[in-house]
Amino acid sequence: MVARSRPRDFQALEQRRKQAARLFAKGETALASIARQLKVSRQSVGRWYRDWKQGGAKAVDESVAGCE
Image (cartoon, rainbow, N blue to C red; front, side, top):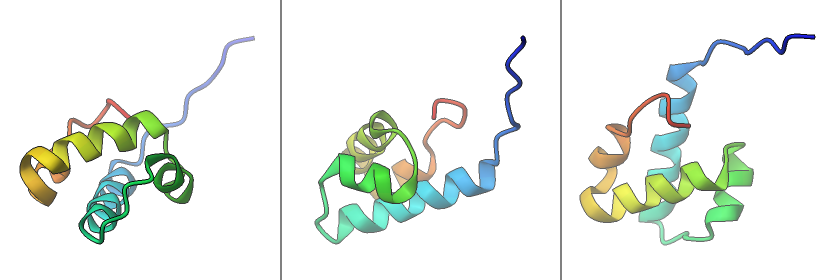
């Protein structure tokens, strides 16, 4: 049986990155909790947090799509 992948909803992924940036700006840094809230992997949130610390919300917005 061949697994079928769903097409990515890049707009939804962008919204999740922006929501994560807002949470970081509020001081929330519990990455696993944010990941559960946004329904993404903890690794993605960790990458977004690293980007946010280095360049703010704009850096998160520019995260490479397809690396989720």
